[in-house]
Image (cartoon, rainbow, N blue to C red; front, side, top):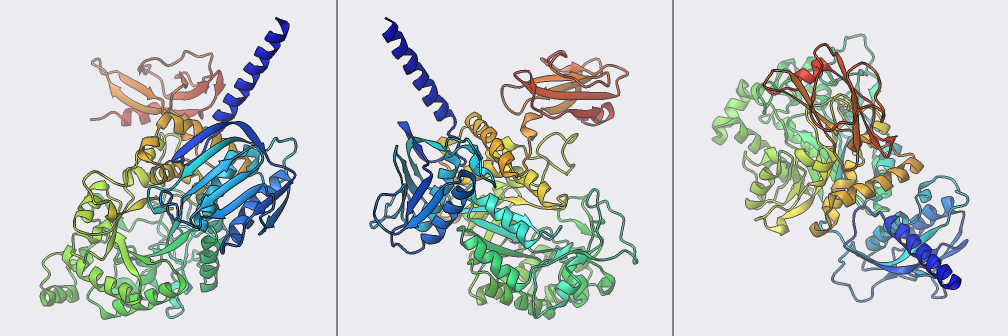
Length: 635
């Protein structure tokens, strides 16, 4: 009997250990299929990665070697030979039609790991999955002692749902260095993104050297440094130094392109025209319709647009290129010529969003253009401009893509559309024959607040993690051949440094990566949250910043029939307990637990809120004034 009891206890211990290993599998984005087996693989002290003789595998193996070498302390050898190895890289001789160019099959056995793909990109993405299967300490930049480098035995079959899986990084509003862009790329590829969209020009700065137009970086790359809330800064004075900013030289761009290419990322440049062009106009005033442009300066964040009537905005200064000036098209040609030489990617993004038309409407040159070309509206004027720019892009052997505002003015179906003003515009563009990249603001604008305004950097709207996870790039009734994929957009008006860029990008960037890579049937919010929490632990070790906003409740206010102010608290994820105070103290789990909407005490001035899990604080202490709560009551 004693022997049977020991065997039973050992079996229970083994089962519990196996269950724990299963729970530790937290891959983002979720693979197409995982088949789990008994047993584990343990990384040995001497690792041999067999790369065979297929071309293009050396740098993938080098990438994996570097990721494994430092934290594990293992000695890692790359070998082209067929002798016994720890990790096998194999390019399929006969293409595996299921997995395509970016997919892979990963087999983890007790003694070895086999990775098969049709192309080197698949081996790279399999390597990212392999890294996520290892303990979180693999993210360390130094050797980690006393870690069992184990992986549960399993088979993974995986391939992306969409070919275009992008992140847009606005380096115009605030300049980010070449090394910071590289760090951004490194964090993207952890989650199988394959496109970096660089927003290189705007009212606040021109960020790329154009040798034929030197003033763009001599003048257009520099502004007065301001800190606070963008759009509400005081206008810079003449004596404030214009030394804030920067730009990328041709050599910088070539280096970034090669760095990205080694990680299977394409870089797409964007030059935003005709609107958002104040930095260019400050450099070359003749590009404007407005004589006063000779006095314009690069914007530092002061108000230059009136949005009180909605879109399109009313420009307070003329930040749009003049569509009736031939010098503008000569300018565009010079810019696009150099972009085409620097960026191998097939598309060049030429903006087209939020162009104000009020200065155009009163300009004699534009009126003459309208009469000559039989243009009836300002939208048609912008359409004329866009068609000419599209021809310039095509003449350089590139494809034109722009924001969805380009469609109403009339552009050829060869122009691709990036739909940001909701999915509806993307559907309409696809039905008109355009290729479409879905990036709706309601899901994919990761510069917006991701929690309650009391604790997040204030912005004009909110995109919760759950909303990012709901991104659907392929709506019903649309030809899937025309939907290229989607992307997350990180605008940086309110993002002043790289740490804040990371805070805004993650975890919403993880949600969007899963929306673009994983099958729809594998999407599960609660399961995703469990994996997100595992990746929080990894990012702590990697020293990458992220937002814990999902732990904070959403706070709303209303009035009851007695006209009393009532506060409702809605958790964003399951399993949290909420505690509050109105007496100016700091609540903890000994305070009454929130169970139903609360009536705000008559003379209270402040509400504090915090969430707990298992008697431990997990959310941030939120402090909200009663006047703030009153402002949230819908009138």
